[in-house]
Image 1 (cartoon, rainbow, N blue to C red):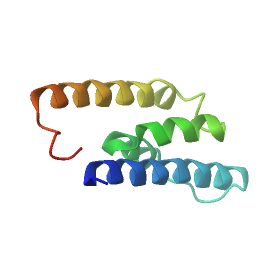
Image 2 (image 1 turned 60 degrees about the vertical axis):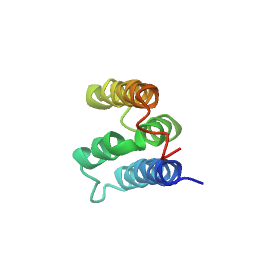
Image 3 (image 1 turned 30 degrees about the vertical axis):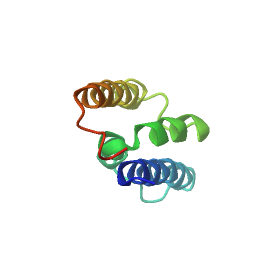
Length: 94
């Protein structure tokens, strides 16, 4: 397996897990994971995991920063990946 695919699998698993942890902490009124961290993990490649975590755990789905921001990040990442693949920049990573 190539490094980019491994990275994306790991970062998305981490994102999904962080959303689950934060939801559990919210229910118990404990210290929370900062919103910047939750959005940031999506921005560095974990947008699919973040989106799945949001809807699996029903967490942050009413906050516009997440409801709109995470899908926009995912779309931007898909567009960027398509551009990079067409230009030949990602062939060595795939």
